[in-house]
Length: 329
Image (cartoon, one colour):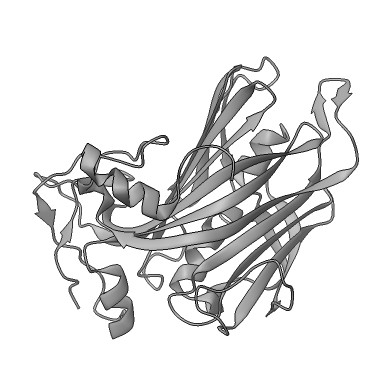
């Protein structure tokens, strides 16, 4: 059945201001008739607004924990599967399909200088027609330089393109087997937690963790479990709501990622923990400690907004409401 019309003109989200240009064109999203869409899903995700959540961040970097903040932006938009871009109107031979997009932004300081990290994930809503995430892109900026990683689903494989200012990484082109992507787990659980993979699985690790550890992206083995969350660190948006904890364990790299989210729709993410050591390998040299440290992000605020139209100085009141004030807590 056809979805309602959606706003489709939205420029790339700024890491610093969470603002983008507005537009007036609309495009009609087309999904297969066999895809049932619950009414609550349509009301929440097709109301012309994005979901914005701010997190207090403690980031593992350089054998230390650094304060910062993270923002998760979830929004549906029309996507062209072949061109691998958002549909913005005009003439095209492609039929658009609806995706749930996540932009995950992290900002934190390391001593005198700072980091800005942005990951974008594009996962189809119509999983019966498009069972795999279309695209993942991650950029990392710090005072030393910047890196960029992109995965595109083309010709039954993930095409990898990576660029770095580090000599040992430089420019890379490769292809990876189509398996689960760690980065898509965030959008998968928002669409339907029952689709999360469990047990032993082949997976491509997260692009951010791989970049920060200077490990090449490759298919690895991990184990996954989903259990009720019994801890006290993460809280639901409404007191008493049940939380679930999805945990990935990588035995080879000794890394563990846990995403905690609300059991009931719309499955708000309460936070996450990512534990790994700071060792980095360049050629024959090894840097950093083997002591594991934990990145932790705890949700502080969530609001719904058509943020791409809220870019005037007067709209900064929404930023204050979200609590996204910059670095630190």
